[in-house]
Image (cartoon, rainbow, N blue to C red; front, side):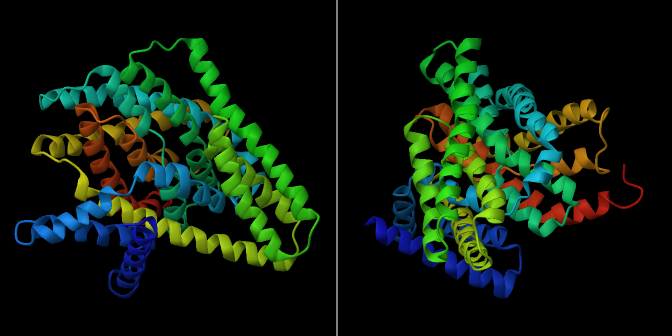
Length: 414
């Protein structure tokens, strides 16, 4: 199939699933389409016993889609920009200490805790995954997914201060997770040693370099937006900022996600206030809201369809089930330790640790990083277990988050 035919098939499926969810399932949009895609995948797997041709055709279609490339090199830039466009920078500044601590320290704590726990879990089933690969697994599964989190928070109606903390953390901690993933990949896959100096250089290049680059391209886009008053041109400029900026960031080896987050914050605040007319703001918001809705739905359909090409065994499935409490415990520890320290100098919404633990959703980024690993038996283990965690995270945590928040925020919550 050509690239156009593949995209056409995916968009058509996404549209049909969105319609079915709106008419019959009535779940949050992204969760609903993923659930329908997952059910269809399971039905196709079952149909393989009776109509192998149908199953094989579906598998062939999914195998032609490079999920890692589609998300990390394409969709993610649009989703991050759309997600940051409406974030108030003054609110983010009020919580910068919490967000920075959770994004850096929290990811590292989770990496170590989950890596250790999953090493024990994998060993229970006689599967071979040495400790370095387990730490690599911790690096790719620890960051919460901004794509999943932002969409769910819109429905959950958590207190604004807590929403800013969760959203801000999820927008920035993927950069830290990617740096950790790169370091652990070099050690686990190639056998290289990573010195403190090497890790520091990677952090500066990816995270700090990405933030500086994002500010630079955001400033250039702001000056261009300010010099014209035509919403069609200005929408095109924001599109160029996202696509061109992300591509250039990846070419010069700085963090594209962090660059787009910083650029989006710049345009969404300074640019919105000083460089856009009311008409331009309305049209840019409408354009990026639509992009966000379409790509979110498409991403979650892809997650649901990926089960068709995963190599699941009984042991891998049960290892995945045991990995769920392991990642929840890791998340709880990685949130509670930093919050306990910060709580000495600032107050938090009641139930913050528990809400952030249950609201720490994993999504497409973890799946994409797992798929980017070289084809080894370690990759098969990590990918299968990652998929089980992601499905549980989105379906169970995502669907129950609103009720969970309401329960914890009753007067007796602490």
